[in-house]
Length: 457
Image (cartoon, rainbow, N blue to C red; front, top):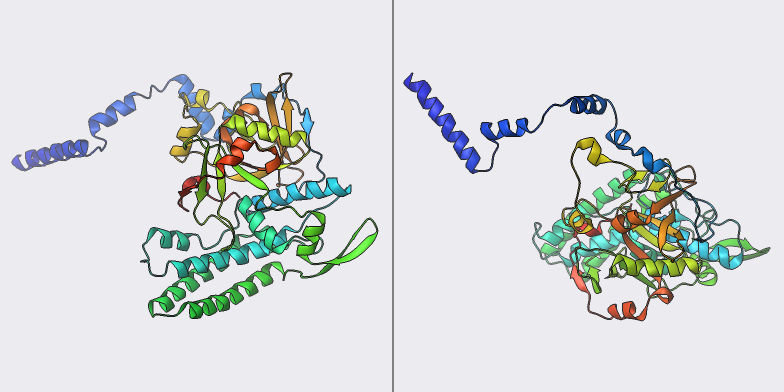
């Protein structure tokens, strides 16, 4: 009996300690269970949820009605691209912006640029970016935050507009027929994993060489040798990039290099003629920010942007669309998305009514708690304005194929735009002087691992 009493005392003591440490006690568990009333409605919802996708049950039938596809201002585009099973939305979006310009300028009915060509050099440049980063941090311990970030992120297929300026500005572009897609370019997971694994191995070797006192010239030579291996892996997967090609336009055939082709038909200064804008209410507005190591090439430019209220960004977007100029745009596409209809609307799903609670965080709070962030890039190309010039809805050209969404597009309400739009890249001619002046500030430097700046896929 005395032994049993001792065990009871020990259990009571343990529960008391558990409560003190923040654990769930039996008393707390009773209260928690008591909050669930097990009503008939609860039983019906449980029965439905037990065998049905929650998003299907939460679909708001009222949102299906009265949604038109008319837009007061729309940039003409021809043909929907498809990134397939890859994270190259940033590349497709940037190339779609450029091809729309070239098609309009030369009256072309059909044109696509080779994503495969640009992606080859993107992966090679990112490999060099990683290896040089390892050399630069070789004196730091392996558990240093930057070294750890490098080894966690040796290579990926995602990116931002900096990839467009870094890669195309250096290597140019070619028409898609000159270097077509391959299975690996459309299904990037395996080759990215293999190259990334090899890069991690190379990274350790470079650190070891540096620890033995290798000179910078020796490390550079070793890195070049390693990049030769990476080049071969990429060439096997994607094909070797073309250096010269013939192309015919308006009955005239000429020979080009990728750089001369870009210069003749586009010639945009992608580094200096565009401004990257951001709507991030978790950080101070009217400030310039730079993300460390957020570029696609070691000799490229870190992503630098101006953080602005959403209404300021909308004004520039409207000016660009009215002038028939598409824009690089990114958002948190998975939120409230009706993929079949291609509609992004806060009313698409009523999770509050289904779950009997509310989900009340605002945009700033969602960012702070990692509940939302930019995940996908598309091409902003239409806006529907009311009689007062205020936007009612927007449309983007997507890269998920012509059968996805609304004829390959996504339509978003203005309310959804407010909550889940994050990034926009516009030409400087649409940017007010007061915003351009912000770019003269010394940027606030943010770390490479800031979760708000993960690659768009």
